[in-house]
Length: 414
Image 1 (tube, helix red, strand yellow):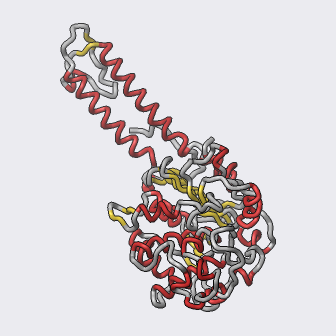
Image 2 (cartoon, helix red, strand yellow; image 1 turned 30 degrees about the vertical axis):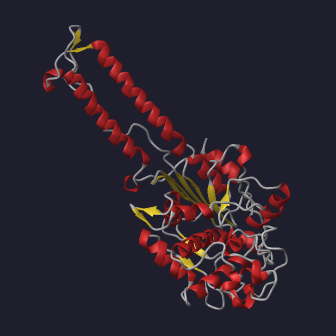
């Protein structure tokens, strides 16, 4: 049977990827057999026709289907055609905009574009030197691993989200403000800890765990949102001590990534030898998408539960101070314009806003400088990866990439 529709030729789609229409073709074929069976059973009418042997159902003489009423057959055929058109319409938004999204992404130094629908790759393209086997640095997209590390640690009995950091970081005991800071506040960036701007500031980017622990708490914990590297590095120090010296990334690999088949291309470390928690992970588009699919399935992989869905849901709850940021994940929630103006330069162009009506209401995403993106929506069964080579320009030259989430999604949904 020939495919009933095709994808844009410029976008790489392969049968081995399990493209979205393969399942449709299978269902369509089953309905053909159902039709044949119904036709065979319906021999009660006198007003008959003979089926031509060239039709999809085949000749009544050859298959012994007998006589059937003409309007019954026409009715069934129209029902089948309607089903086909309906399924095609449902699939259409998933892949139709891939070419336009690719062109938009490529314009802003995009190297990878990958779209998964219901666990299947429906769109995959590489430009500007990108390749399927080439890991790309995620920049601050790395941060969203920390929420999953924390959720795993809660499930494993290592810590609680609302546990005081000073319980593990003993140096904080006796400091009025530091004693109040919780793990949750570290990860939703409301700890009040001083967070030097990272863009173009190499010292801030490369700050170690111990240097981060020594940073002062400037504001009452839970009262202000401040985006930066330091809280994640402090969380790394907490995990290092909880794990009795095991690197937090090693724990992440052992606990989640390796069991579900995700390979890390690399992960940068500070001078003290410990992995950065705020940036530095390098993944191919497919491996990042695989991680996104694990999140979309709420911690279940191939029937096995690796993470409780209730813990993941906590990662996707914003704070009162900033509803648009959960435990290391960006959310499709609104925030005050003043806060958005402060945050946008730091992550270079994130403009997801629920009032636009463009984004899925349940959208969660990881975002990094240079417009590295991992978008996830359970409602729309989507995982979308967008990677670029614009990190160096953004960090060293302080140039905004020009990329817009809104325009990208408009292209994807066109």
